[in-house]
Image 1 (tube, rainbow over the protein chains, first blue to last red):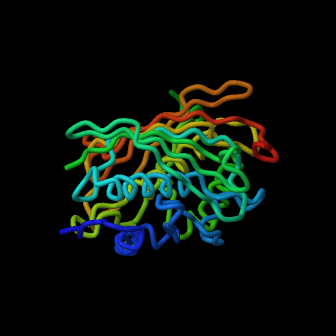
Image 2 (image 1 turned 135 degrees about the vertical axis):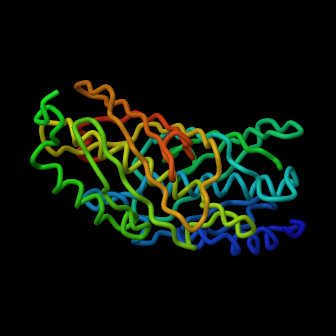
Length: 138
Length: 151
């Protein structure tokens, strides 16, 4: 069973139990009471050693993980939601520095939620990637 | 069709080895399985660190995303006249069934349309049987992005 999420600290504890989140090093911080997802830079997330740039798959995995946790935080799901589809637009190369993400639940029905995700580095107005996904709320 | 028509360019093995050596690809252990003109198959070996749900032990979609993105990107180099920088523009994935833990996931990606500036790919991720895919994806890539996409 997944414990109830009543704070960002609870969300952080849940994130710590997800092995893939640990593999890429994803974290969550309190941003005026809302979750702000952070991917501190680490060498192992590089997917282009010439630029260098973060791997597009890592950016996608970070955003998908952020959306799952955001749904848990918003109490739209009592167990980890399952991703149904995922659509990513890559807007800028992810530089070898920290990456941030925020999520917005666009609509949630009884069984399915639609979530928008945005990832950025220097400025939230210059996104590295945006994504939208549907999740099944078991 | 003569075998020569399905041959990959002579530079392909070197480019494929470069992709396999990238830090995130090494972290996931991505391995080249097979290739022919227009098509690449890669393997993602199972490891506990890929799990996205500790209760069900199902592999995280993020690891599958990296597998699909890498297979789709490398499929371009089975057709391109020489190595060049490419960038994923968009990637859309349908998750058709959960990947079983303790088993590898494969991805066969196909570059089905290559133009002067853009490449179009489709990819299937599967375990034992490609007829029962774990995920299906389509992507577009920009060609000749030597310095990435600048702000």
